[in-house]
Image (cartoon, rainbow, N blue to C red):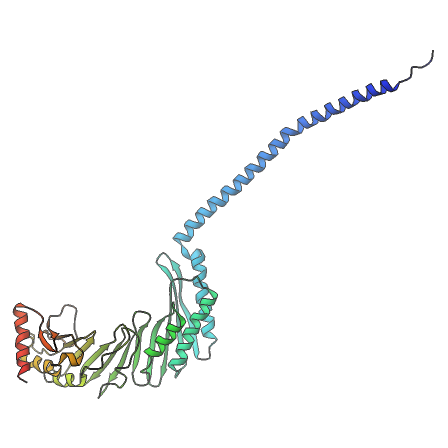
Length: 359
């Protein structure tokens, strides 16, 4: 009997069965892999969420840290960068002997950069002004976003003057240059320069003991600067206005001469149109007598010509004024002095004016 042969139809059925078997195996395999893929996706999602959570929590704590301790954040970096930049720039100048960082802090009270600089003796005011202005320009280039205090304490001797001033450098470089040059105009005549040079006030310029009023006494300076000198035992202080202009019409020498008739020592202050005289009282029990006060009032009788609005005479036995002093005050009215107060004080002021009119 002949062998059975597999016909194409049989092979086709067999192939179909094999294909079905293969498909079933593939589907089963695919079915087995799907759960694994789901677990993998979930695992990665959990990792991403964990990373995001760590970043958020870390960022939150970082914000708290730099808020409570600004030195740890951008403010601290900028403070240190400003201090370092300024120190390097100053140290590179041939006029500088030393430049030390004395403060570079960032805290809840604000940012603060301070340097202590010593210049070579006889450095000119113009050279010092240019150096400070260029230092500010350099820090602006390197750290333009810095905000806070930036003060350079600079000291040196020049032409017999001792200079030790704190210059605010957190402002326009040209303003620094102009203010320093104007403030130091009396170098060579004044003995000492102390205090601040900034956008609000200038230094105290002391001429020391003199025999005549200083020639640079009325020259313009920085706003709210003070110039002081001592002549014949009387200390005179003149303060500039907000434009840096000093009074030019008050006869200090004559006021001193008449004040010395009452006392050998005392003080005279001129500020914003107010002339204040302390030291005319020698006996606390008697207070300010018309005989002691009248000569001073008479010396500046034409208050309008003297550029005065108020005259104050201290009613206590002091050489320099105090915050709790009593004053007899006169107000300039159409070029003549009138009592400022009423009552008994006003009567005392009127008595002094009557006495002055007799001179």
